[in-house]
Structure formats: structure tokens, C-alpha cells
Image 1 (cartoon, helix red, strand yellow):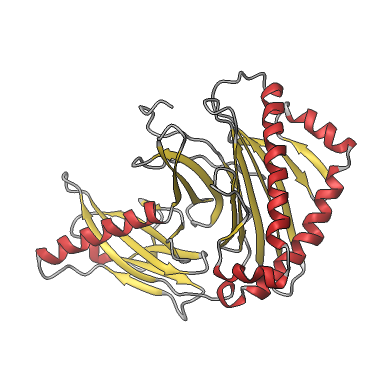
Image 2 (image 1 turned 120 degrees about the vertical axis):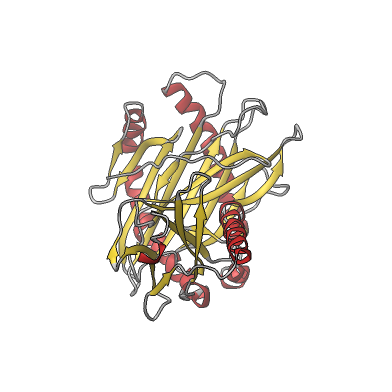
Length: 377
């Protein structure tokens, strides 16, 4: 593979419906991509309950099996004997299905065997606090763009592109919508309840955020204040900049909520300010784990030493959020090239609600790209 490329973008993003307050969700992302130089595609499955990574399968693993990612999932064999062997078999059938589907789609799009092509499948359900189904979703993307999705209200397939009409007709003839709908409304709900019971101590916790503010000045004198939060769980968090007590919308910047690598999450919000006017600004942090909102104000350090330390600490925190939270694992391909696979959360808008998981593959030592997000109405 051409090492001169900054980063090989493999998978687009599938939009995740935002989980409503008090609700719980089970979501699975299956993804496969072609590798012309190897002649065999790679397949990955990642499962989540709420914001917790639940299970993972990677066809490139030394011993490809469905593996637990949450500590409490280690007990699953006691609760459901044969769970890991049975579901590993399901994933291997998915490997075959996705490899065949990639070949079929390449024909639909009249594409050559050169280049990388990707197929993603996202499905899951959301239940209310009392365990009743609230909504479900099942959607596919090809080469980072919407392909086909299930309308669960009408039990019909919605083709997003002309090429998907072929798939729509095939699945309608096989009554695939009914099968998917049964899984989403019955099987998925059953497993949400079971996982919540097993992992309730972890999944029902609300860790409050720690917060701090840093001050940054560019060489040309522009000033930015940055409000940092970390160590929180659940992911829903609100960061709001205030100027003289009034909400500040202009000149603000928000990053997506990111995994912290230890089961908690991180986020920051920034605002550009006029030099000397920093005292007019404050940051309001709201989270379910807080009894009341946190209000942070910038306080000038008493010495330049503290300024330097603050900037260094802020840079380290950003590095942790970008690298520590995004990188899942590192692996070398048969040619010896080191790669890293990243999974990150993307926001819908300035509110920062995490709505999309993204998988990317980059050469070791290079940064992940900024990726677009596919959204359903």
C-alpha cells in the first residue's frame, strides 16, 4: 500500500439515533472492506449497550472469535452456556455474507476490482426505563454513503440510491423485512434487558465530569478560552459559553464527545475572546451526575509558570482525547506495515450529542482524518 498517503479512509459513518434520557439501547455495527492487495476482505463487528462497548469480532485476529469487551460480560457463559461459541458462528456467517455482498455491490456500481470498497450494517433497538421498545433501526451504507434502510413503521425497505433497488426487490421477495423486524422488536429487546441486568452496576452509573479552563494565545495575539471536561459517564453532557451571563453562540467551537479509554468520556468547548476581556466569559457544564451545573471562569495565573503548566496540561488532555480515546487497537498487515484502527463518536451539531460511530484505518503514527456523517431523516 502506498505509504505516501496520509491516511486511508475505509469506512464512512452511519448515524446513530440519539438515545433519549433514561432509555437504554443495544447497537451493533458490522463493517467489511476489500483489500485488493490481499485478495480477501476484512470484517469487524462491534456491539454496544448504551455507551459501553460490549463485544468485538475481528476476522484478522490470531484466533477470530467474538470476545467480551465489558468486564461483566466475562460471566456470560455462566448465564447462557454456549453463548460465545454460538455467536462466533454467527459472526463467521456474517464474514461470508459480507464478502459475497461486497462482490455483488461492486457489480451493481460497475466498479473494478481495484481500490477499497466498504460495506457497513448498523442495527439495534432502544427501550424505555421500564423495558418497552421505543424505537429500532436497521440501515446499510456502501462506500461511506447511505445504501438501504428498513422503515420499521411500514416494514418496507427504503432504497437510498438507484443501485439499491435491486437489493430492495430481492429482500422483498424473501420477506426479509419481517425477519429483521422480528429481531429488532423481540430478540433485541430481550437482550437489552438481559445485558442491563448483568451490567447494571456499570450501565446505570452516572460519573460526574471533572472540569477546568485553559487560555491559549496565538502568535498574532488571538485569544481562545477552552472548557475541558473528562471522567464522565453517561455521554450526554452540555457545555455552554456565557458572556456576561448571557449564552454565547458566535465564535464557539465544540469537539465530539470522545471515549477516554477507561470507560469514561471527554469533551471540550472553545470560544474566541477579545484580549483583556476574558473575565466576561464563563463556561456552564451540565451533566446528569452533577447535582447542579458547574460554572467555570478564567482566573489569570499569578505567574508565567502556571500559564505554561496550564497550556501543557491542556495539550496533553487533548492528545489523550484524540489518541487514547480513539485508538482501539494496533496491528501489522502481512507486508509489515503498522496500522491502527480507530473508533470515534461524531456529534450531530453544536449540542455535541454523540450520534455516529466511525471506523478508520491509518498508518501507525499518523492522525485520523475528519470524516463526514451519513444521516437518515
